[in-house]
Image (cartoon, rainbow, N blue to C red):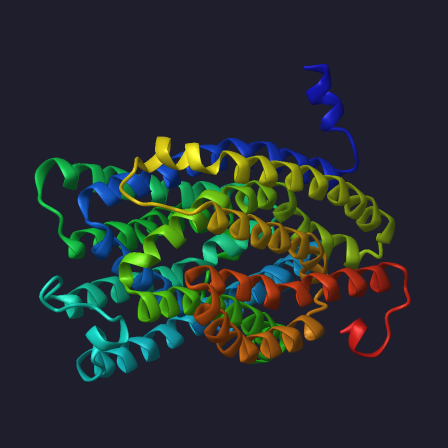
Length: 447
């Protein structure tokens, strides 16, 4: 108890961040367990080929998240700044403007995809054998509709993050995954493997939870933030977009890089090869999940500190994250060494994952969390220009690099390519943040 009391000491910003870290650890721990259970459960319901199709399709549909042109993250920064200034009317205007803009974008997405769904040969795009899955159009349509609903409602999570309450956002995500797990389990007990039911179970659960949280958030907890057309401000949209477009570039390119890796593997080596790659990815993704628990509260807290010119607090947090990086490097090394036995315990021997793939995935994972340890601070300060330029260059180089390396090393070549293209971000983020906190950033380094 004394240790806990000591941990929770500090100024109000630090105490709130620490409380959210503790709550997030509990929630995310449960979420990780559910996340891991979903893999063998779904694999047991579908075969590796169908599961690979769903992984590829869901990664492509995740591009929809990028169509918000960065409004969600822009809202997170602008709302946090408005709350730091104690301007509730401005805060409500940012929320309302974001909400109605998301509705408009969603309507456009549905119209566009309603034409594409019947024009595009999805069997060719996904490299799917029609004799194995004969209703790919239905699977895509059902998933798309639920993804679009989630697209609008996920701004609720951005609000809690802006209020320095990321634990609530984690709770929403956990409940969505838990519902998916329950539904998939029920399907295994009552039906034979059917890809359409899996698609609905995965894609319908998250927006269902957001629908439950909508009245809780805007009627009971924060009525002064409730979206209203009266508070839609065109000038605030311009203010949001000035920051959101940079978030959009980072967001869409990040999704493209991950989704393209799945698509390349599916097309070069077949959908069944997407499965071992994604299982290894999910295994090591536990590390970024834990890292995000510790660092996610720092994003909006950094916005608050930056608005109030509290650079000493930011420097103190950076020093702590350096120690966490060393800890995570040790954890990833242990995970690589133990990966063979963990895979057998987790999914049995139905899918084979090489030690080389695990090692490369471990290296890729460390580069990602090292880069993010600096990105969160830069996000909170709104210093995004350099990152946006870098990721565009990386996106252009990604395909030719991975294509060449896949010829040399097979599926592992895709991972080598991902390691190479992400290293530049880690280096540039480190240099830029050090310049900003030491007041030596000029030109592109200060933007």
